Image 1 (cartoon, one colour):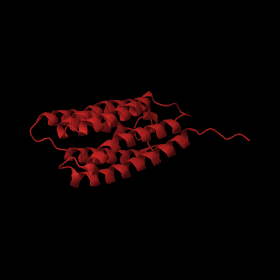
Image 2 (image 1 turned 180 degrees about the vertical axis):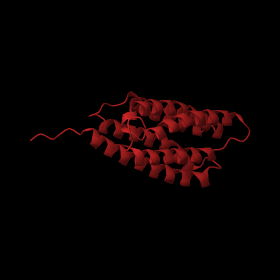
Image 3 (image 1 turned 30 degrees about the horizontal axis):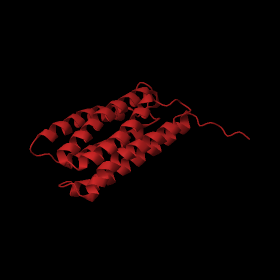
Length: 184
C-alpha cells in the first residue's frame, strides 16, 4: 500500500499550523522577555538564544512540509542563519547588551531578507503579504538594533516588540493563507 504524497492543500494546512504556533511562541516569548530585559540574566540569555533556534526549527518543519510543492531556498538560509545566530548570541552574551544587539540585529536583517525570498516565492498560496511586510520590517528593525548598540541607552526591550510584531504577522498570514487570489 502506497502512502500518498502530501499535496499543496496539505502544505497550506501545515503552514497555517506552523504560523499559528509561531504566533503563540512569539507572544509568550515577548511576555517573558519584557519584564526581564533590563539586564542579561539567565532567563533573558536563554530567551535570546532560544528565539533563533525556534526560527531554525520552524524552518526545518516548514521545509519538510513543503517538499511536495518545492522547498523555497530561503528556508535553508533561515536554518543556517538561526544556528549561527544562536552561537553568536551565546558568545555575545558575555560582552553585554550592545554586543547582543549587534548579533541580534545582524541576524534580523539577514533573516528578514530570507523571509522576503520565501514569501515572494509563495505568493500564489496567499497570505504572504504579511510575510513580505514582516521580512521588510525585520530588515529595518535589525538595522535599528545595530544602531541602538552604538548608543548610550542600549536595551533589549525592543526585542520583545520585534517578536510581538512578528507574531502578529504570522497570525495574519495564518488566517489569510489559502484564502486569497493569486493576485492578492
